[in-house]
Figure 1 (cartoon, one colour):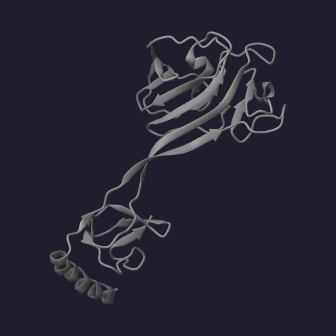
Figure 2 (cartoon, one colour):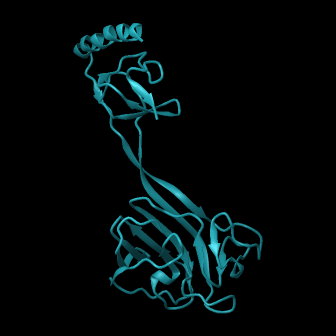
Figure 3 (spheres, helix red, strand yellow):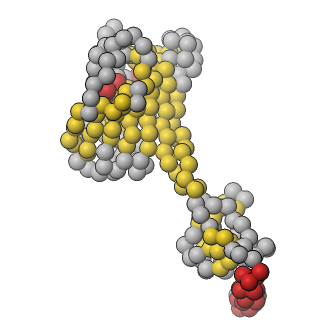
Length: 240
């Protein structure tokens, strides 16, 4: 261990000299949109919906063979979403006038309702026999519904940041009434990518970087030199 420390000291001193020759950069993380759920409902006519994606009254939901799901009753996503913010959207043909939350809704992890204050933001006529894009943009403190880009409803939950499941056809009443046709459903969230390790970059304690598919946390502030890659200098990085 002592030899490792003595070996590191000249390297740390060298970076000071290198700093006089090369202007170091600063590590920056980038934020991108990542799809965490999607279903295009591909499959044979009358096949059931994917049980790995959907739970609920799955007996009254089936595929039409043309890339759609016919949902006679209600479905819930098998997954819950607990991210602090994101965007959910679905292409749905309802064939009836109804609230946006009935076509694409949110329920708690146990399938119960999410209590809060609802505010109407407008109306959209969806009883024209066409597909419409229903969307929910959420943060820790609100769910905002839109239809074809126009906001129609805001829900401010009593409990901020609670996880939820997406629901389809909460207004449905069984196989022979109030069926909707769903073309696709997707959910995306914003994620922060850990920057890749680069030489001549200043790293501060607590920064995180990626290198060769693994993530590392910076243990000591330094400006990286070639050969100081994570995994090669344990005094500077720890794997997370």
